[in-house]
Image (cartoon, rainbow, N blue to C red; front, side):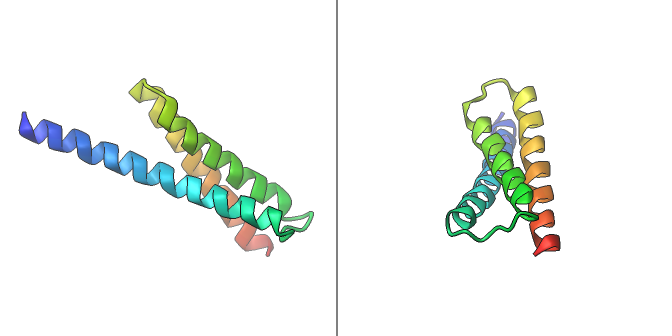
Length: 90
């Protein structure tokens, strides 16, 4: 029983850390937009990063574990694609 609880809290902490990372990427992309950093070619990548952060935030309000996992996966993919696009086009 104790091992099961430990495993559950470890997975919960991992999910929260991943969600927080996508939210941080979105916050940085939002900040860059506010200081007029993006060009017309990089703006869509910033928008994709922000969308990934929105999905990361959505994981906190979802109660069902299976859809929450899919939303978290979408958040990670969007944040990674957005950051890769920003790095390749800058």
